[in-house]
Image (cartoon, rainbow, N blue to C red; front, side):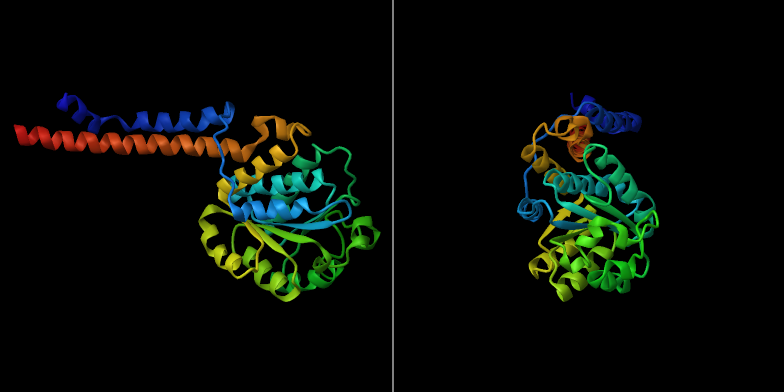
Length: 291
């Protein structure tokens, strides 16, 4: 038996690749829906938006690109769905080049398709991308028109009903930066610190640790960290607004939850092979000792 176990050390690595592929593919096609523990940094964002109503405005900044879309897209979509479900207005913009070219428009197109009653310019607006970093942030805090003369279609902000309701970012109820790099930090240490606007950040898992300092300093009201955080927010929106939209009722459209299912199974496969490998190793050593 020991020799049989020891043979596991020579297993063809292609079997491992196949199991990982199946562990990733099957949950994507047939979602499992593993339980999700809601953490306070994510829940605090949800709870704050729950206090908003018609007429309130949230700024959603797409500060990431396609390379981190697997983690960032689900959290951006979940925030949008939550706001639209409560009739909260959304000013969408980007301070990261690829965020304005791809992430912002793609996210708006996906989610607004689920809310056909929404009217562009009244319920939401796409301001597109603005370069300039912190200089642009300071301008839009006082007056959006100083940083964005027009929306992504070139329409002057003065002609857009929603932008007549809010002059600058500091008049919003909340700013959420979905970020892949340092831009989320800028929202915390500039917009929140200087203007007092509540700020939340959604970031990749690898970036999440640095943002906890801002949470502790009360410069952020919440944090969505990686795919796990996105799945938490997605789950809360689903449970808070059940069966009102296809994305809440259809597991195939709950991308963060599907991703966490796949990630969980893949981790279990890796752990299993680590355990098997160790058993095989010690079995082979024992066999050599007996020989």
